[in-house]
Amino acid sequence: MTNATNAPAAPDIPALESRLYMHTFSPRQHPITLVRGEGARVWDDTGKEYLDFVAGIAVNILGHCPPVLVRAVQEQVATLIHTTNLFYTRPQIELAQLLVKHSALDRVFFTNSGAESNECAIKLARKWGKLHRGGAYEIITAWNSFHGRTLATVAATGNRHYQEPFEPLPPGFTHVPFNDLDALRVAVTDKTVAIMLEPVQGESGVFPATREYLQGVRRLCDEQHLLLILDEVQSGMGRTGTLWAYEQYGIEPDIMTLAKGLAGGLPIGACLAKEAVDVFAPGDHGSTFAGGPLVCAGGVAVLREVLERELPARAGVLGRRLAQGLQELQQEADAGIKEVRAAGLWIGVQFVDERATAVLTRCREQGVLVNKTSNDTVRLAPPLIIDEADCDRFLDVFGRAVAR
Ligand SMILES: *Cc1c(COP(=O)(O)O)cnc(C)c1O
Image 1 (tube, rainbow, N blue to C red):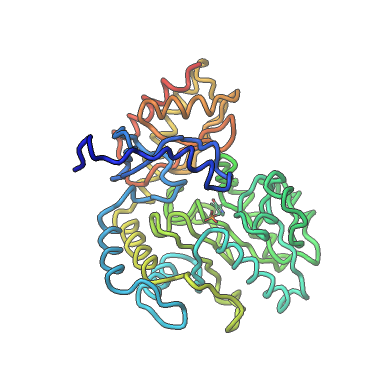
Image 2 (tube, helix red, strand yellow):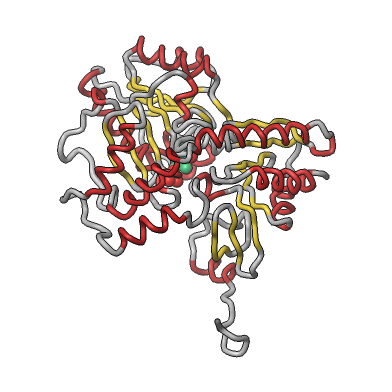
């Protein structure tokens, strides 16, 4: 422990960041410095405690520093950290086995992020189009989608704001309104190779696809000989009430992409595909860090824990409890809640006006962290390990924070 006389002065992080960082994140939604986390709680550098309903944007699914993940990583970091894919490693094959066993997909390519998982899916679909659909290469995605920040995934993302500064973008992407099957039908041409969708649009504020829509999309893909790519980067790993969101729609994708919660906070992603869609040949794709033993050992520990503790079902139960509390709050005119959209422990609360920043600031002051996806929408994505008391505490603080 340091004492007051020889403790170094705390660095002025906001001033330093403004000099040192590229200004992509400023101003921060939460201008606090987090120094420690445990379970669903984090602490800042003044010692203030918060209930964390951001969870690293749906990443820390087991909460902060969960013992199973800490143990797995500590063991692995002292055994073998990195090898490259010139070699086999055990954690990588174990994680691939688990993913294939517990999904409808057959083959895995590991990546380091969601954007890279989608890049892999795009490359795979294009090569498949060359071989099986007369050179078709276009991918149809939805407006208000989010697929990442690389050039190809920004082109795929249906948000002009993210695209305009970086044009010209790679060609081969068209956009249609989400949950509109007719628009999709009209958009398909002989150049189309795939339809890429999030089962629940997360970054735009938690908009679930309807059952009729996703089933219709699956049928359309089958009729037109197109690939269905589901971006489950944020919806996967139990968040919506099932391990993968597609399970609730009675369909299976041809390609599925993962990242965020896959290793509970370690940087990892994966692109999964049906066997018949895996047309990659040696040398077609690669990545230096991807699928390394450290992150894969973390992924194995996290996925096992999610399955053993049946956290997806728990996310469904607690998500309903939260949504119900929020719908009751919505009855109070003062709360200004226009809509509550929920998919398990993933909830968008849209207000009638632009009060999201005020709400998240008041919540933070009262020791609860949430984030906003726009000026009128707050998004909740707590760790899947929260309990009933955490839900009730959240509802209490949130209820007081929303009132004008
Ligand atoms: C976050 C996200 C991505 C991008 O993931 P990164 O790891 O930030 O590259 C892609 N798709 C969806 C649906 C996401 O939520």
